[in-house]
Length: 458
Image 1 (cartoon, rainbow, N blue to C red):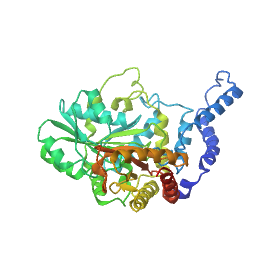
Image 2: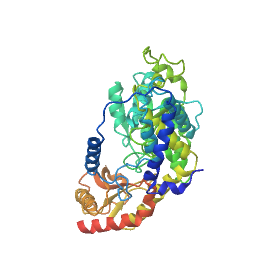
Image 3: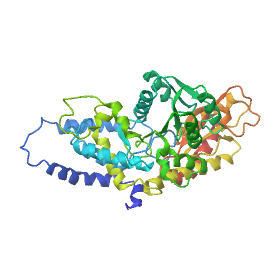
Image 4: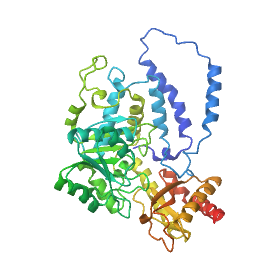
């Protein structure tokens, strides 16, 4: 088992940089029999100057790596993932075909099989891709081939790309109402299913706005009755299946995820990977027949399966697979292991922040977080005024070095509207994604800065 203390070592990147050189020497030794082939002339001085300029330009960013960045879902990759990716770039493998990335293709297959086993799938079909959008496109493309012309349903809080993807695929997409916790409403879903034209239902396992987890057991019971495909969009929340300490509804939903027909998960979110690294897996491996095509100039080198034969995407960075494989060696995908411990810390941080907000009369809280995302509104005479104040606090917090996000959500999500005049159907609120394990230790500092920013505005 890896030394968990390394996960929190701020010098780990630099320590691993020292390990990169001997690793590179070991890699080069595998090609030592080749005759010398000097490369093109390279001006090290000029390149160094350009690299330093790049470093200065990159400072024009929010500090996504720091615990005081608690805004959007941006999580730094694990230092080992960075180093493994960099090491692979000396080869620059392409995982479309085996002759472009033999070792990295094998590593991808092994890493994806481990992801599938998180959901209880031993003989699944899957691969990596550029991110959750493309992974969801492939899942819905397969769904459309198996249920041609039938509609796709998702909640009003499902990711907006599902509607866009359905349009690209020429399939009808309809949004289904949510309950007061931002989850797909089973009664509203039933009403849509009774129209008789639904081929696929998307269950979101962690919405990107609030982290809400759709009631998958209810969706599966409706599948037994109406007969449609279930796609689990777990791009954000999928790794939380490894955490035991979920609230009951979320735990029940993740325990049922293995009964879905397809699942998407993003290793470049909670899987500690660089962008872009998404993953799509299908429970029934026979859907590989839908991808069948011929490419005699790329698939000639082996009779084994080429990843391009089960993917809509062609050229893909084999370095992504290498980085993921390495990270999963260090942090295995096991229930309540080291990786899950980081997720659990973010969940505890979200609960702690929610409790502090609930005790503050200046704020109106939404429902209890199911994952690691917290949303809250500002108490004000009207919804419009509350929305204006939220944006002002967002700016004041940034001025004090606390980086939050804003979101526009239905009023029904908030438990205490008080005497607020509902002059709008939606309210602009503050939002915080506490996806770094370190956030748990920084809650007091985050609350103090939020308090100061709120006093600046109010």
